Length: 343
Image (spheres, rainbow, N blue to C red):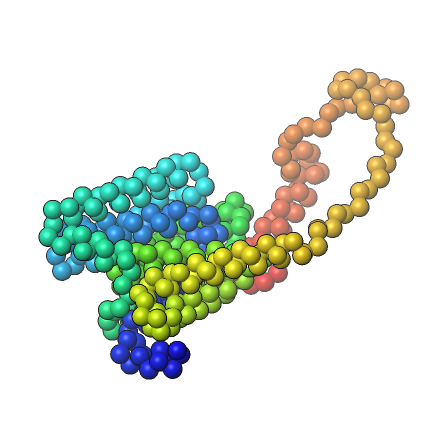
């Protein structure tokens, strides 16, 4: 099987290389999507790109596929550019974009000659047909995604796990969300332009979901997710060539099967892992009897005060500078970790 598959490379290498580049790039971006629990956002962006292609067929002419890229970027920025995706308003906007784009694409091409064929072709993920200029664009996008991930993976991990701390140390989560949303929309739009919506959405979420079930930290997901993505695409292409099946759908099925195996492996690992150790409880030292606020203490004959809820650093003139200094040291250490300079 592999010998016949390798023999077909001179004829189909643009499509094979394009599929592998899409699998690698979208698997990296999928870590951000899955880590921020924005899987439905990825579906809405993919559907918006399909709507852009439909609008381009009606009004754009020869530039119809680039309309899909622009629509994907606009949807990504509108949904996730200024919010984290966890609030109710973001969920409502995501559902609205998905449903409007899905219905709008059908309505635009309802009376267009060949409109049904265009929608089926863009949705069915026919990756056979990529050209050399597509390889240059996808290769540049993949190289940029890998370089940025290697350079800023510490910042990305902090933005995913603790955006409040990221804002406290000056990382500007809003600007980072905007930049990652633009890059996500661009990558999804270019991938749909070459391979279709189904293949794009699968490569964006399935490898990252599988990596989340196999890994115990986000740092490992940035490595495992592209491996699963590229391996699933390569296996799907080989099976499709051997069994004469559609390559896009076969690659999606292989990645879905990999996610099912990851679910099983993750469940077994959680069952076999030892329970977390509990720190021994400290025995409470006997102290003065509790007194109500304003009640005289029999030992000192002075009224006792209940602890106040003032923030750290403002309780007293002696405690303030010490607490503020400790906070600055903590933030400085977090800043060094986030900037990649180490502890």
